Image (cartoon, rainbow, N blue to C red; front, side):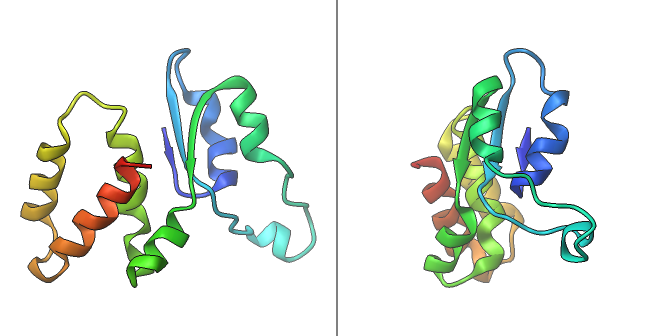
Length: 118
């Protein structure tokens, strides 16, 4: 299961099968209920999920910002997930080269490799 935010991981972790893996972008995005004060954002989400699930967390937004493009955070997360799948790294890089706009291939491949090698 891939989650682009901590609370999203908490909401959907129960869908994982027993030997499933949870890949989480370690980022906090407050939902409107938290922003308005109706609810509180849960503390220690990553730590609590690690007690129950095989979890890989990455601060993908920070890594993407280092590359100069925050939009590439999702490809960093994809790289983390891809490392735990049965496809070779080169296949992923080839798919990225064939599917993203030409001007963003290098950036997206770098973002993928940051996640893959983390």
